[in-house]
Amino acid sequence: MTSSARPLLNRRLAEFGTTIFAEMSALALSTGAINLGQGFPDTDGPEEVREAAVRALRDGLGNQYPPGPGVPELRTAIAAHQQRRYGLSCDPDREVLVTAGATEAIAASLLALLEPGDEVIALEPYYDSYAACIAMAGGRRVPVTLHPDDDGFCLDLDELRDAVTDRTRLLLINTPHNPTGTVLTRAELAAIAELAVERDLLVVTDEVYEHLVFDDAEHVPLATFPGMRERTVTISSSGKTFSFTGWKVGWVTGTQELVTAVRTAKQYLTYVSAGPFQYAVAEALRLPDSYFDGFRADLRRKRDLLGDGLRTAGFEVYQPKGTYFITTDITPFGEKDAHRFCRALPERCGVVAIPNSVFYDDPAAGRSQVRFAFCKRDDVLHEAAVRLRRLAS
Ligand SMILES: *Cc1c(COP(=O)(O)O)cnc(C)c1O
Image: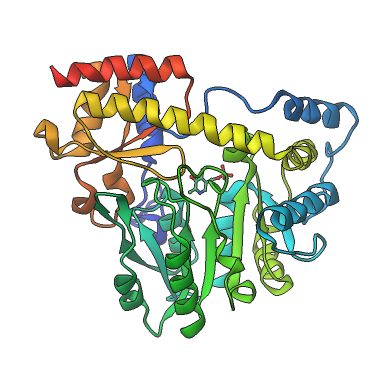
């Protein structure tokens, strides 16, 4: 402790404590409950991708600092992926940057693009790193809240338009959206794009769940809309798509100007990371469509498995169109406080979940919402469903 009365943690970060995931994962450990809190798969990704990482390690590929922008093999594979899936062309040498997961890409983008006092509009409830990164960059966050309705959570485009002021610099968009599972439609994205062009805003889009869309939903990158390529930083990652969340290989694509700006911040955060894994992810991105289709079908089945279990247990379930999360409401149990509900849940029935209230500026907004992850083995989801049924009795 220093002698002054000044707190150690600076003012920008004062409001941020330990993340909810640490609290709830510790609870899962101490109680032996099934952890449907943090969103990581409990089985690893494709064997051939894991073998590619082993081969890279053995062959001495990436064991020393890889190039700052990422290894050429991976940058080429990312550019080819954007072209093949979305018809977006980017130059692997100038318009692609490999990062330490999407997390670093988000941080570097905001640190590079914001001046202190700039307003950033983000869809609320938001992914937990957004608020902290906006704060570290000295920006001001302005939430636009997604509202629950019969069809999941919806964006009110008028609210989005009204949130833009002369100080708005950037829209931080996440689709498919964690934690609600909302996938913005082509029409919604077109309206966002029009707004960005009209008000001359930068856009950072977090598309880490780009391959996890279900039913009739479709993922369309914002960068594909008219006038958007030159103002959009597109972020994705291998963690969710290939079930290797520990590897932390993410990337940014955009124009040379945008990528250069982001790289300027990124080079002083980690400089580089995950050398051998970059080679493995390059191979992963070249997997045939059958991998991506199979992965999506598998997760869709898991969504339905857990969703049915939650409905049977008595939760109100907001059907997700993407991601690997289901947001529920606990009001049918006569409960109102999701945080309290989640703290008691391991004791009551041996399951851990996350209260969505922590993803809102105003916790009252998401007070009765609880999020469950379904990226788990079928037997784990079955067992969770059996345990959750105890709530009904
Ligand atoms: C998991 C996740 C990230 C982080 O991705 P990493 O590649 O693991 O850093 C970013 N955004 C959202 C919405 C996520 O769910």
